[in-house]
Amino acid sequence: MAFYRGITTNAPSGGVNYEKLELDLDGFEVRLKPLLTGICGTDRGIVNGALPFAYNPHGFSRLVIGHESLCKVEDAPKNDFGISSGDYVVPMVRRPGKCINCFAGRSDNCSDGDKHEAGITGLHGFMREEFGDSAQYLVKVPDPSIGDVAVLTEPLKNVEKAFEMFDVVSKKSIFTDGAGSYHEKNSLVVGTGSEAFLYALKSMDYGFNTYLTNRHDLDVTKNELIDKTGINFYNYNNNDPLEKNGLDLVIDTSGDPATIFRFMRRMKENGILILFGTNGKAPATQVDGMDIDYIIERNISIIGSVDGSRIHYERAIQDITRWKHQYHGALETMITEKVSPDHTEIFTKKPSNEIKTVIQWS
Ligand code: NAP
Ligand code: ZN
Image 1: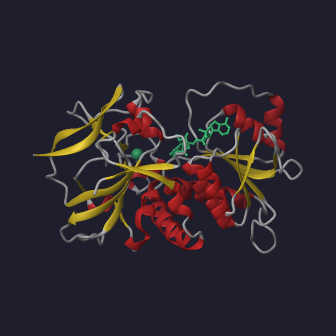
Image 2: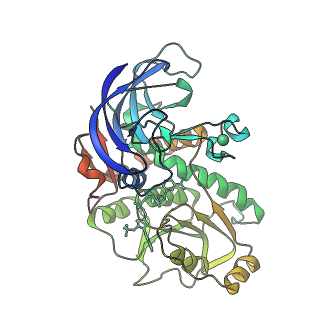
Image 3: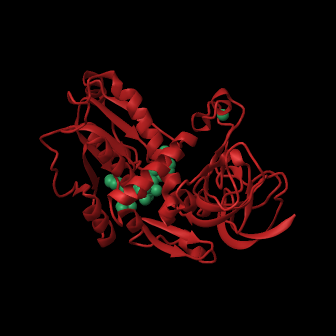
């Protein structure tokens, strides 16, 4: 046993501390030091006691939080996964349970809920000075010169999984033009948080005419990101540039039922609606028989998508590497602030211009 400092909570009731914890690194072949850990709404939800599904590891009265991270390998014995000392890696969040999907390496599709999530459900997370892990759960960043933006791998892997679902479902009809491109097709991403921007970049990769929307205008930092990437944005309370064209792909990151159905009612034939945002506290909305008819008559497909597996982490690293060169300086704009681990107020006060705040460990 050794003592390491980490950012902890008492799940699910909440609270936050940067404190020393006695943690056993035995049994883990690889020793890791985090360089950066990203903060997302889930971390804040756990700290605020708003996520009843979060729980401490067995035998612990504290949970180390944090699931978005970029780490350096301090020490690794020879292993089958090509992980060596000095490598930069992103640890995977979900750890398998005993179901057939978990067994097949797809704990993102766990079929009985028996998986664990680091920093969320029963497993210590990555916001700590040092930790141990198994090589099989580490995804190598082949070109560490991509730098800090590699910390966006974990949030982007969710997007990669959702687009894998899109690839499967879009085969239902002739969705592309004759040349196999999505040119002239409209995609709308609802919400303007970090996940929404990553969805919009992926949607542009496909060739969609891509829009982001929210119920208010954007701040200076997000406008800068819009300028650097060429993503379109509109405030849906002011105007609606897509009114006459309809929507082929809608991706919701707001979790707000009324907003989801507002845009669902604008979708075209064979459209695909991806539900990604979660907000258990969002107010109820009314859905009537006409809405159901609308979905059926137009062959609209609705996809719910959570998490991602190794292949999605790997695709995320590839996309980050390419986007870094394609959109000079844009991905860097997404990291709006770097704070030290003892700056725990960051979990209770979200900075007004935040896209992605990260904790810098070394
Ligand atoms: P975030 O920064 O909180 O993004 C949510 C966005 O939705 C914000 O831009 C928010 O706008 C916007 N929004 C809220 N209500 C809206 C409305 N009525 N109309 C339009 N926009 C609205 O969170 P994130 O990190 O990007 O994540 C996005 C969502 O995905 C969160 O709900 C998160 O819990 C969820 N998530 C899901 C998965 C998964 O695997 N399915 C994984 C990670 C995260 P404001 O600017 O006004 O706040
Ligand atoms: Zn499972």
